[in-house]
Length: 355
Image (cartoon, rainbow, N blue to C red):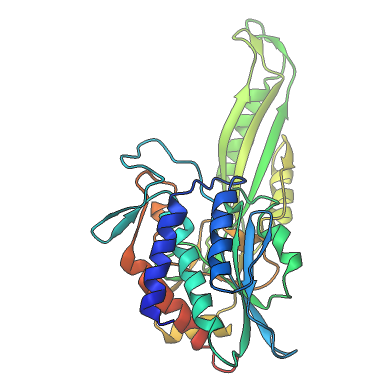
């Protein structure tokens, strides 16, 4: 199939995906749609939960395996939509609909790329295309559950909206629940130890602290206090104050190292919800990045999290669309962005001569 036909099919498939709600953990209908589409193409798809994947044959033992991955789950529509989130509406060059930009355009572009190469003879690499679930919540039923079922992966292209710039690194995420302990007392008398004040002192220390190691691509570690709760009534000094920290880590630290630094800094008891979403990326001298540089693609460090964080191998995040449109009302993608996405993905893989 020629590229022009693939581009039109990709856009038609995206319209069908938009029409089927696919919130995280509720992606069954879009998983079925993708499975049936690949089955009609005689690609012999497989399915695990709401994850769908397909691969080209491995023709040599030394053949390296490349994963093409994007997700088909979406967040729930925010207030402010003036169009139906589940109606694929084309106005001029724009295609509106929930998930059109994040990450439907990337998904159908990577699928078109897989279809292009699976028709080629004597591929120098094995390709696996995987449309995965639960990315928006970093859920256990998404890419993390699928990876053990796949061939060993040498590296991945992760489809997320980056305006087709190469995100060669992305920040990790750690959410910390903190609790300051005090002693209850009557607010009218000089009694008790106010846990709220302890929490505020800790938050101020965190605001003023600068992590020594900064990344040239990702900048410093960023810690934000995002929630706080204390007290039961106006005249009682609170003996407990709970607050939440949103931590975005760079590649200079593991999440656990950052956690220990913060715990040593504060009086409050800290508890990390998870340490698993570390910073991730790919070296500049990797063949896929070098291929992109030859195509005059820009590279950068991404502040947003993706399924890269769950991949124990090098990965490049790149895709059509703009991250600034994600999770917004009247989300859209531009037709030409999808067309260029397919061209660029194909060019990136072709550019890895001898890989």
